[in-house]
Image (cartoon, rainbow, N blue to C red; front, side, top):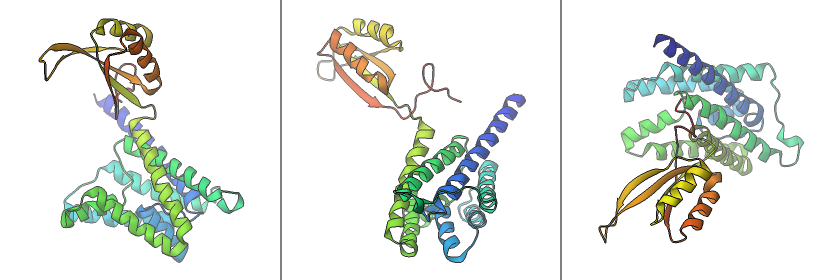
Length: 289
């Protein structure tokens, strides 16, 4: 058990370190040199870096220390060592990469450079932050401020986070102008979507519920042609009270067309419901860990 926990902790810190490095590269190579502000403490740090010359990493470390302390004092919330490690490491890596003149993407040198910097920077930051979150840590930031707003103003945490990021975006609008601020908004969406893909999986899945008098043949064809497990549920009609089997099968998105063909070939009148899944773990899909 101890060996298993040690191995897990080593893997956790390895991935957290890798995710922090990827996030730092996204900031140093794409976002900071092009003044792209995507909300959060990093966005505020970029604004003050351009206006006052303060190091981005040092600012982020200072802001996170203050936010962690406020959260502990006011909210009574303690933060795991992994989150503190990630926040400190990210701040250190940002200043390190800037001081060793890590390669940067200069958007002014090519056509549509700002759009490319926005997409590449946002996606890369999303990959890094997604990996950190996947291993049960975070990079700190304005989500703590959102929790404080929730406590005293009774505003939902997500709404509070949106308010804070919007204020930082407005500040970027004043400092850098409307075009750069717009790219910051695009970056926020690119980062968020990439984080979702990392945490939930890029390969989306569907679960289909099939009701048919010819359910046995449909079940056999699914087993043979799709090689997917099928669960037979017992359903009852609300109006008639009749009991009838319901097939439940989980498939990948690319298999939807084949499933439709199977159902149509066997019973064109079958009643089918298909729903999106957030995540699926188990044989034939993702491993739990």
